[in-house]
Length: 321
Length: 308
Image (cartoon, rainbow over all chains, first blue to last red; front, side, top):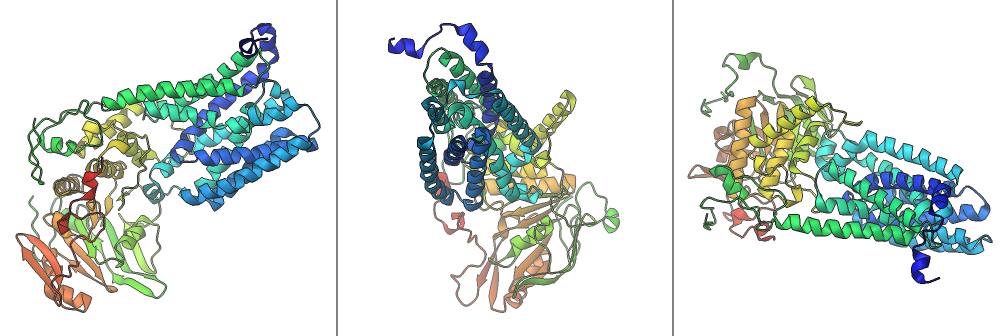
């Protein structure tokens, strides 16, 4: 078989599709919650933390595999421990980075040890790191459904206060939002999502589902509605698309997922740059006193700036109309 | 109505009749309020009576307890002694009757959030649960926010991400966010510190307009009273564990402040501006903005304007 045939094989597609229903459903769920959580991961600067949590989740999952325990539970436990440690110890960004940098290789090492000790099929082993097609059986799917419901409920309840606490902690605290308490709560919800992602795309590539879709969405929009929506769409398309393409082959699904995810990001980035060059939003021409105030929007590129009038500014610079 | 302050009589805002002042519930009221951190006493015996629509400037040296007073009114800091009420109700945490414009502009560079969404958060950002809104109420909220943005002169950039706004624009958006819940008092912690003179004037005028039209009492913590001197009804000056309270003409005098600091202090008036200087050493200035974000008064270039 040529490389191409190994990568893209659509023999018996219909049958395979039937068999892998569970994976596709799991993938869709992951796209949904990963896309939503990803918005907060980007805004709270937790990209590195996600990677750290996924390594420890992997350690938990491989330990569970070794001792014959439920892999999903192992994955969740590893995730939660990591999430809480990072959330509690690493409140400041720099501290957080160093804690993650320390925890991560330890977790990965443990996971590698447990995998090496595992006497079973190598396909199973590899899957925890890089994701595999035939990973999701019915009990696992039920677990994932349960976790998804919990994550969605938690996000639905705390979306606004969490967004407030993330963007403007001072004012949020003044309004009675429990800014400090929300941090560990969010880390728990994040940990649950990561644990799920490890099952489908493997520990090394969780970022492709938790970070890339949200990052892509934020390149093209600032809307509080459309960013999460697009993030979910991008994430789901990446996972489900990746699974559908990888079905026939014998290779892990993650390269397909990450490539689609990356391609979406690149397109969004190009589109976003175009929009940025045009000034992002047209600014309306306003009467004199407010116009002068808009003149110092020097952060934006020239594009469609609506500065028009000649208004002396106290530094003595006169801007021509 | 013009802003006249004579003796102890203070300005009442446009929509409040002259007779109403006596029967109104004060916007802010404290009795015997004292605040101390361990051994360090910030102020005590503070009896404030701030009617709706009054503009109060809170001045004082660093560490004199200005920000702490705001925290008390926000319900975040309990008083050591005494009590405080806002609009007749005891002070509590997270009250929507209090609008707050904090000191530092702390919004992260990478935040992709529209200006109007920041204002929206001032309205219901603290509420739990999914925002289920039917088309009509959503429309009402949206037009409410549009009005608010227009009132602070921010309607030209309501849809722009906050990371793309300049300092002056962002500050106006924050004020709109603080006003979103239609508060009865507005607490401002050095809101003009990072702005150039034109924007200082605009923001100050905007606050004055608001308190006249809506009767919102404004408590304005600042290092430099000059930007708002025209609008100020009362000055609360905190220093050395004591305070002075009264109209600017009474509080900002050499005798009054020398007494307060326990050291010779000169209050100079030049072209309608007030400068507070320690007598012994004329180069020591107590009042021109020592805030390290605002280098304007020292004649140095404002480094924020040089940012790309």
